[in-house]
Length: 485
Image (tube, rainbow, N blue to C red; front, side):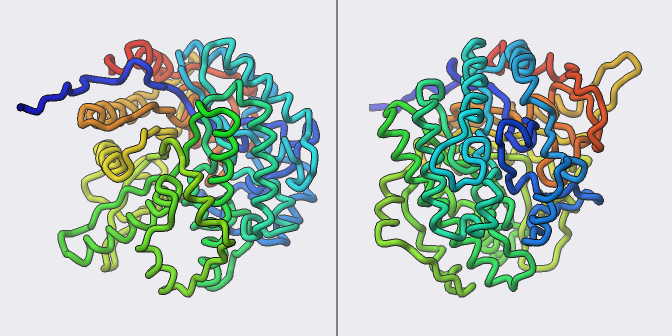
């Protein structure tokens, strides 16, 4: 009997076209309605476009907490979604979004992280957000933790390094699941959980300046506690709503060997393993064997509770989501690296780079999608992808951003190719539909949106929203379900 199966020709009819944001870059309202500070809001603006988000010390944190302004901390002010959510969501509806990814700011619900009872004002804010999204038929995709741990948990517990933080997070997730399970169908636990390899901004643990092996021990112990907390959250929401879908989220670091030298190929394989380790644990429910050698080589001994292995096995996620911006090359020999901040990578001579040095590799997205589908056989969700660039207003108040259209077009074309390849891709939420504060350097001038926000790096401007050319292009892409690119 001949084998024959129909090949997809394009995006599925229920594809979730959308946009993505995070509370700490978007909301503002940092000192309103009893909200507490987070690690994102104690990291000062970079003065030289150099990433400084891991360079926290207890002294710098104490100084930031004592500073009651947003002058040095632009993520505190965001772009004022806190007051403009109704008009902003109306704009997203006009754009045609079917889904909107946002995060709940943990410190709005539990300002210090250790309280026994939640902050009702914080809960009420997200009630309004979800009700407004529902009014327009936009599906919320909720990240439970997007680099927004209450800073008090760093001061009291050294963040996720302390196992007690699992209890704090579990109390928070129980509250938000109970409150919003009938308004939210799609959840994610930790944003770009592998970013915890780089320290404070994702672990909440202060380790700046320590020897590398000590840093790695702190970071991987913190990561283990996040794995356990994520697995508990999966079980919580499934017990409450068996139909809810909850995923993990990875910053996908697609890498290629710089040369055919087998040593380069093996180095690229190791780099890939260190990236996919996080998905292996959360999708498969157990630690992969290849990490044993890595832990031994770096003198890392993790503290497991007796029940942790069973918890991880019982808390496997429903889907795998990831961000994709760039790719890298890997070599055992000295080679050129980009001058990008969070996307610092081995230079690929076949790729062009953005204004911020991020190499643009649309075909790499198709490669990533195929590799992840082959490895995990779980639905995939691209929840961040976009171009940070300088946008210029014309004299008549328009933004002609053909460069952004070109970037998004090429990546969406490769998504379609991957679907034809057989990949199960459930959605795409581009970063970000509305301009917001850059995470890595706290700049406003690094713009991702299809909607411009009138605010500069110093926080000056009207905060008016202006549709860019890319707004109308993406609107048509969604309307035609990806057929008209």
